[in-house]
Image 1 (tube, rainbow, N blue to C red):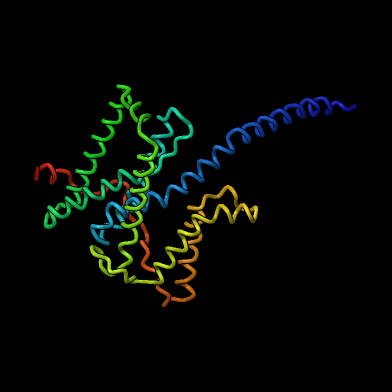
Image 2 (cartoon, rainbow, N blue to C red):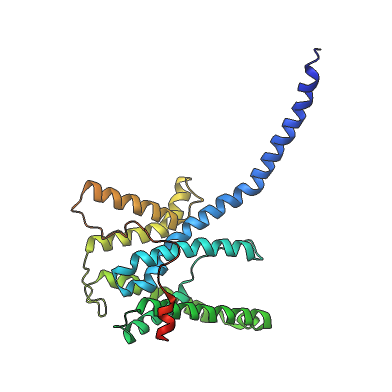
Amino acid sequence: MSLDDGPRAKTKPHRAAVSSRVQAISEKFGGDISAGFLAGVTAIPTALATALLVFGQLGASVLHSSASVAIYSLIIGGVIVALLANSSPIVPVPIIGPNLMFASLVAIIASAHSGAPDLLILITAALGLCMLIAGLGQVCLGASGLAAVGNFVPYPVLVGFLNGIAVLTMVSQLRPHFAGAADPDFTPTNPTALAFVTALVALIFFFPSLARALRRFVAVPGALAALVFGIAAFQAANWLWPSFDLGPALGRLDVPLVPSFALSTLAADT
C-alpha cells in the first residue's frame, strides 16, 4: 500500500457521512419546501380573486393596484405567519367570508362618498381599521377562552353559513359577465369569456380525478393546474387567433411596494 492510500482512505468515510447527512436533510425538508411552494403558488389566484372581489366594484382603474397589493400582502403575510405561527399546518390564504364583508363595506363607502376626491384613501383607512378591530377581537377571544363557544355551533348551521358564502361569492363573480351588473338579464356580454371561465372552474373540480386516472401530477392542486392552463390557453388564443375574445388581461403589475399617497390629506379631512 502506498503512502497516499492512508489520507484517501480517511476521506471516504467523511464523504459518506456528508452524503448521508445531505440526504437526511433533503428527506426532512424537501417535502416541506415543495409543499410550501405549492401552497404559496396555489394561494396566488385566491389572493387575486379576493382583491378583485373587494375592489373590482370601484372600476378598472384600481384593478392593477388591488392585484399588486394582493400579491404583496400574500408574501408579507406568509412570512409573518411562518415566523409567529405555533402550528406547522397553518397556510396563510385569504378567507372569503371576511372579504365579502369588506366588499360590502367598500360598496357602502363608495355609494355614500361617490364624489370624494380621496375615496381610495378613505376606503383603505376604513378597511385597515376594520381589520385591526377584527384582529383585536380574535386576540381577546383567544386570550379569554371564549373561542371555545365555537365548539357548540351545530354542524348544519356551519354548513349553511359556508354554503351561503360560496353562493354569494359565485354570484359576485358571475355578475360582471352579464349585461346588467346590478340587475342581470341572463344575457352574457361575452359568451366566449364566460365559457372559458366555466371550463376553468370545471378543470379545478375534475383535475384531481383526472390526475389519479392518468397517474400523473397527482400532487398538483386543481387550482394551480387551472391557473397554469388558463394563462397558457389565454396567451395561446390571443397569439393564434387575435380576434378570439377571451376578455381583458390585467397586464404588467408595475406598482411599487409602498403606495405613494399622502396620509396627511386623510388626517386633514378627518
